[in-house]
Image 1 (cartoon, rainbow, N blue to C red):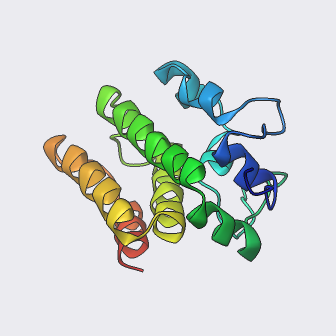
Image 2 (image 1 turned 180 degrees about the vertical axis):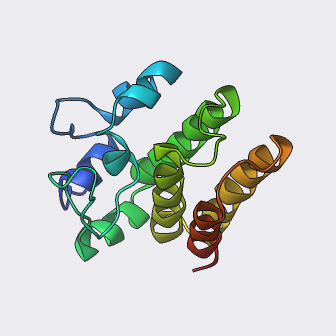
Image 3 (image 1 turned 120 degrees about the horizontal axis):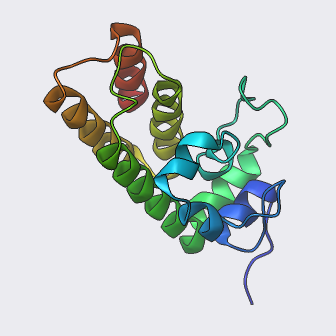
Length: 156
């Protein structure tokens, strides 16, 4: 028998619960690139943090119990890795975010921070390095503040 979920974010990442719109993680991971760009309330569920989101203040916030439960649950860990790969594919296949300023820069910071917290520094660094390579190959269009936030998230 599986362990009960410690909260909504753990349940969502473990595949046993849905978000505030009734979507499961597999539903969100199946979004098209257009949906990933246009929908603004999934990133807090796929890559949760223990701080309230300014963009989506109603999104749940990670508790310490959920952090431990997610780290210990292979289903949640697998979902995080699939989410990381899906977002990397999104950023490889789109280039609207490769500009001086874009809302995706905040998403990237969140993803790196969440991966570091929940999946470990190796996963966070892999994502950061892949994003930086895309940025560099596009001629380095992103502002220095976003780049600093990404680097700080990867190094913490």
